[in-house]
Image (cartoon, rainbow, N blue to C red):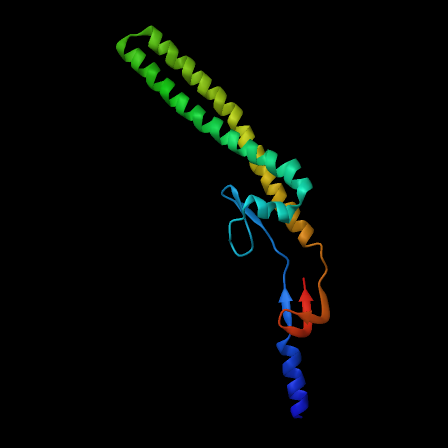
Length: 157
């Protein structure tokens, strides 16, 4: 009886499970399953060189340029509205028309920036879903082998 209990303890004590890594994207960065922010090198190691160079690098550039254009456009629109208001208040047609022109140019910057921002973000979210989909394609396996805690059963899913 002692042998059965000892064998059961040894077998159950060596049982380990390991899940595949999943990544999430939010706030402009990728995070692993433990919530740690991933560096560009770690993202490269996870998603592979094809997706990294074809999609990730371009999407990051699109997102960055889209944000810069949008926020610059908001600033130019704000400055143009203030200039147009002051031109009307002081009766300066030149200042008012420059303000309207600046507000129009700022609107054009916003119109160019918002689509780039949205497309870049959606491409990064696609990378997240594609990686997680590829990771979930694995079937669970139970094997008896040497692991990091000794000889025993290993469940991989």
